[in-house]
Image (tube, rainbow, N blue to C red):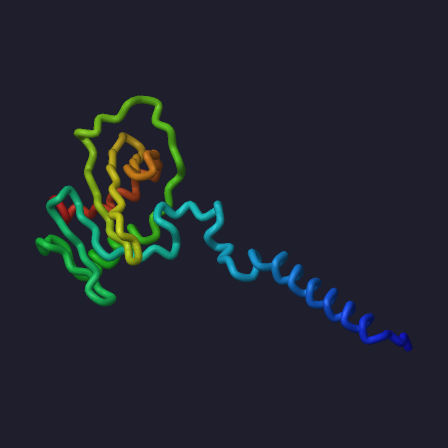
Length: 160
């Protein structure tokens, strides 16, 4: 057994505490951050974002009422409205650079308010022949989604 003086034991304790602090600092990012929010998350709004209101073309406003949704005017309701909002909540898109200029006059403006965010997210949806382009005004960035998503995001009942 090693015999240490009082000063020796103090040094052992000091180095032990310093080692523990270094261990905590080295693993802090792994323990206290959510790795599901890393760069592989291609969700347009983030997987944890909660939509409070969605406004389409300044004509239809959809708002969260508890765990359900209400459209004003009531052009869509029930299961169709739930499915539409689930599609918006889970919307994933890939960054995209359009080959040509897109006419902003032909875009469908969408405004989305999220819980915990002061600024409303503004998007422009541009329908192309085989794809749906989404322009995120705050990020000044284009995204692309398959054309099949358009019918899920904007059901025909909304403007039909």
